[in-house]
Length: 442
Image (cartoon, rainbow, N blue to C red):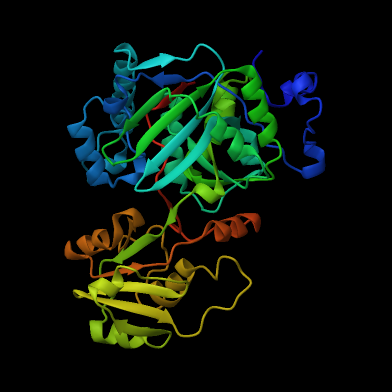
């Protein structure tokens, strides 16, 4: 018997296995995670290496274009977007969407994916460079995001939301699980780990070096146990997928409107739930095109009002920044450490973030960047590319680069719990769930 959120609770209580287990009353806690099993398509083992794509936004637009060209059978070719093309050179929205539909149909026609015959949850493990995180993939209601039970920490751009919603409306495919972090109230990690003792259904390494392992959970008893266990999770936090979550809300409303209020898969988000203790948070580094008319010497002098500015060697820079309030800066081929002279003292969880300090004390007042989301003079470099990635961007014509100390999971949760949002690109979670492993059609 399939387990479907609240509708299965009476059924669960009737099971001998759960008669001595206390089910969480949503009215008592204010929130009870409604995880449910689902029936996606799954990439076949012999096609996984060719089809599965690194996370869409783990690559820049230039990288995505090259990757799509070099890997014609890859799922990335079903997700082409206007951002992949230089200004004025993008196909029309209708042409792009039709291209994505055609590529998806080609993957379905050549048996790259097979439908799962019964309701399932999935244990999903990502491993890279000594790091490992193991989560559970399933569905949760879109309403949980609307009601604030799935907590966000970033704002979203309306234009990007509309593009993703249109993609869902026309292409009708969800393949990139939204990454959620949770605090384990006790026992979930052990229960999930116990399900990985058998050989995985899929086990392969992507070109980015991330090992992907997947265990399919179809036993109703195991599914029910996970559903019950997650009911005790007090909150879920968006780690990655803010725009996809917001777009899913609009898509669900559109589908219900077109179908006379009928419910369906569009009412659920495909999510990957990871313990917060297992997630790796890196910084998003910043680079600025110019100094806003300042000479480098004048810029350094103005920085010295709020920071201790010191040149550092390349060897020393490799382990910096080492604490909150410390930054690295690349300027004219020289690397500097910036240490906040008077540490920020504020109870505001956003104002105290290092990314906020950089914005409020450097980018806005000294370089004239007041709109950190849309100013074309400011760009972001994922922390996974390291200092070398930022240095390359500076070598390519960006005049100054900054490295922030990573925002912690605790800081993220404090901001989310306060109902606030961080500055753009405050966190960089790596590795991220990939695309083209699961496929849910709506």
